[in-house]
Amino acid sequence: MAVTLGDVARHAGVSLATASRALNGSARSVTEELSAKVRASADALGYLPNAPAQALARSSGATIGVLLHDVADPYFGGIARGVGDAAARAGLLSLVTSTDGDPRRELEAIRMLHAHRVRAIILAGSAYNDVSVIQELDEALAAYQEQGGRVAAITDHGPLYDTVEVANKEGAAALTRALVGLGHRRFAVITGPERMRVAEDRLDGVLEALSESDLTPTEGMVRRTEFTREGGRAAMAGILDVARKGGTPLPTAVIALSDICAAGVLAELRDRDIAVPDEISVAGFDDIPLATDLAPALSTVRLPLAAMGEFAVRLALREGGDRDRADNSHASAEVILRDSTSAPGVY
Image 1: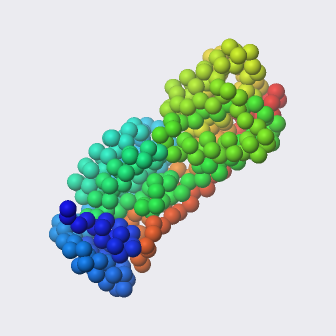
Image 2: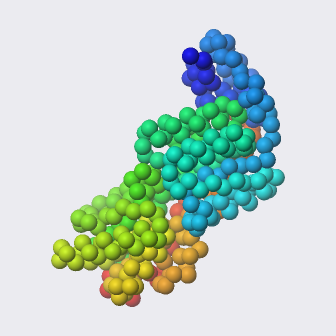
Image 3: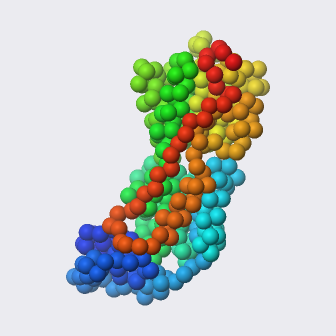
């Protein structure tokens, strides 16, 4: 079996990106000491550098690939705008690809972007939780990096990539504490599918904050759905039906862990003549532009969406000294309380 660049990196005790820079001549510098160590490992293992890879590493491709779940979702639209602005300032074009949260489509897109020799790939969608899926995606990205490509991620996609760390868990916890502080004790939570790490992080934040006050949602009050308006509406309908059939009190607060889901929640409550926030408070997450246009205006967690995209481009294109591990930037979250939430029974 042929020796790969990954084998060399492991033998030398450095990251894949470092080994690539040392052997493929990328523009990002590597110390001479580290370069010598990597070359020694390559010689010891009999690694043969890939000539096309070296050419690609030295090339100046004019495109950045952006992988996200749905460009029509304002959350991803905000990120894509930030990526596009930062890419334009660097004299590059951004190529946006929607994957619909399907890892097979994401894998195909990575391979296509690799074949088109894009300068960098920005992973803007949520990472997945399935180990086999993660392995396949990591292997495809490793092959791309082995030929000089650069990768940056928004939210945690593992230790191999430069990352814009987003305060998903912290923001969800802070929102929950704010609602508890208003006097809410009966909560329902609408989160995303288990395959998405962002959904799990946000749900963990809510549940941990509730546990601090010895609170927990009752059975049927935590619903999983796609992060869509239709998903939020269906989940809210399920929550109301569970309460009605079980003869249990309605929640006084519903936390939908994306604003798009929250828009569906508000629509379902409006159609059932349930007043917001008089009877049920509703909160979302992301602070997309639509949040202030909803009636009532949506309480939410604000993320700096465009800045997150810009941060990712800066990480992907950064120059300078070598780093044996990926670099991270941090995107904070801010709780924004608007008209859709109030103290229970108080408008």
